[in-house]
Length: 237
Image (cartoon, rainbow, N blue to C red):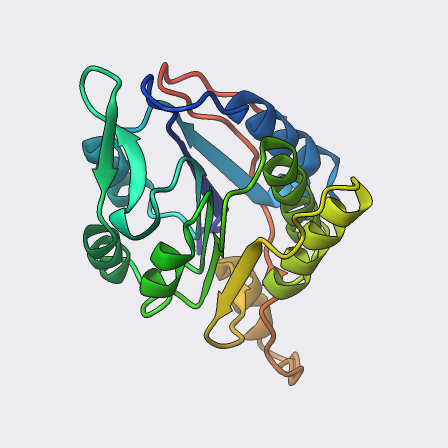
């Protein structure tokens, strides 16, 4: 039985007709947080830049991630700001995003929308995905980066999604940024994200089955952290 990796798909978009965001800094801190983490070898990061609607569709269909992270601009009820062929803003509607995530509700465990005014999309996507994080108002670059770094640091050190979310909020507070109430978690239920390896170990002959109650802690093993950018480069840690 093959080991299953915990795949984090990071989608970044900063259209040329929108304000400049420090998406490169956010990406760097996410990689650094997981590289330092206890469970660093159990995650795989796939990053896509200047994401267009077809890129979004292709990446989710191809990689079937457990975690989807969007970094960019939000437009409230109008949707999330992706890019068109010329690099200008093209909105992905809340309805379209909701239908897309519905198709992969059996695979995707968590969605993080690190974009201003993205609570509307988080609420809608939450109909189908257990854990969705959105922003209830505008969020500054520093707060967005601090939250993301701490969130993945938490997951990489065996915290549950809910506790990693709280860690992210604390990180914003510790940085002296008055935006710790901006990230909002929509949680449907507790669930365990397990690899095939861990399931196999639970059902080995002559070994009592683990009766520990299920939680939403990531129970994972045996994977790599790597980057698949638009150029196809791979970075192994």
